[in-house]
Length: 88
Image (cartoon, rainbow, N blue to C red):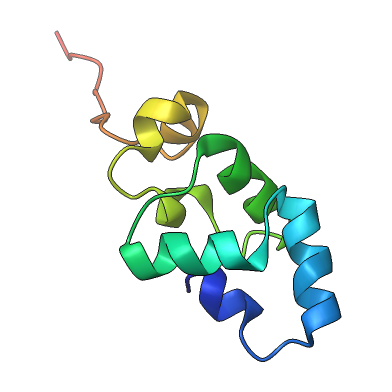
């Protein structure tokens, strides 16, 4: 789901309130989505929080989320292999 999908079909006043929580405007959301541009990290965090995770940072920035939020990568065990203790 994109932020635009999340807003779609909601009344304009509700869209404005949601975007206010995100620190942006519906026009900015439409523009970024139509151009395929990623949202800034602060907006992604606000989107994730206000939607209860329906818009997750990992999905909003799929190419670099693990670099921006390494704590999420660690929590998801991203890029780490399980290491078994050696048996002697």
